[in-house]
Amino acid sequence: MCGAMLGMVTTVAGGLFQAMGSMQQGAQQAEQLKAQAAFNNRQASIEAIESGYKSYQLGRQTQRIVGAQEAGYAKAGIEGESPVDTIKATLSEADMDKQAIRFSTELEQGNYKYRAKINEMEAKEAKSAGYMGALGALVGTGTKLVSSFV
Image 1 (cartoon, rainbow, N blue to C red):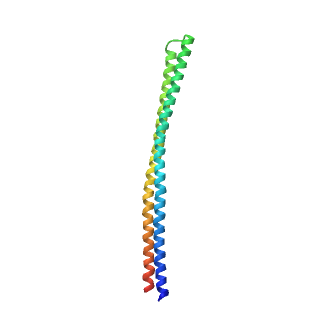
Image 2 (cartoon, rainbow, N blue to C red; image 1 turned 30 degrees about the horizontal axis):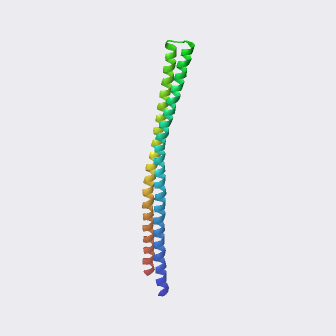
Image 3 (cartoon, rainbow, N blue to C red; image 1 turned 45 degrees about the vertical axis):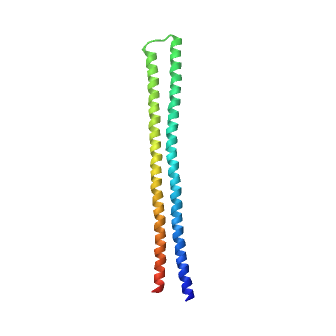
């Protein structure tokens, strides 16, 4: 009788530890995924800051180029539509470059935000999987106990 009781106690203890381990594993995986989601959200914010800086730098560079073009044309005594067209082309090209920076940034931000959402969903699933694993362990333990009496 004592051996049977010891067997039941160890079966129950084993099932409980397995259930606790499953829940712990799910919780740890969920926390890791939440941390990854936070990182991806942070990266999306950094992309916006970096884009603003790149656009600013491009604007400053364009001002220097246009200034040098104007000075060069003035020094050479060149006037008319040709210098104006060249400066307009420079400004137009800089504007297209700024739009490319903005578009690229929006894509990168979208990718990081999407990854963050996926990580958040996976975190919920990991936690649920931990609970389901725990439930499975407890049901398995219960089945072993019941079958020992049959």
